[in-house]
Length: 127
Image (cartoon, rainbow, N blue to C red):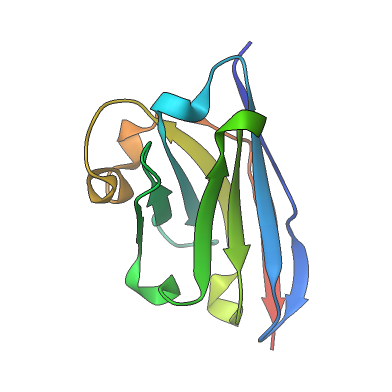
């Protein structure tokens, strides 16, 4: 059974940090581009960042310099380190897995390209 299970969400103060994890099971992430998307109430789903199979990364402009995606293929896990958090980062964060050999940027704006989605983890940032 394929699963993506996110963890690490919670509450943080503005300027604080959180680290999200995404544990995959039922498939190997090594050949997938892996991503993080988020959706805030009343807003459209947004690509946060993508890491491709060669560990090249791309981020949406609003998180550049603050968020970092990494992957550990041996542990079949992907991480999202979030620093300098802002209230606008408040959202449900979803881990995604994207098959196919495209540049990371291709997937960032195409949530429909994800083959697998996690159930999400809530991040709430207070000012």
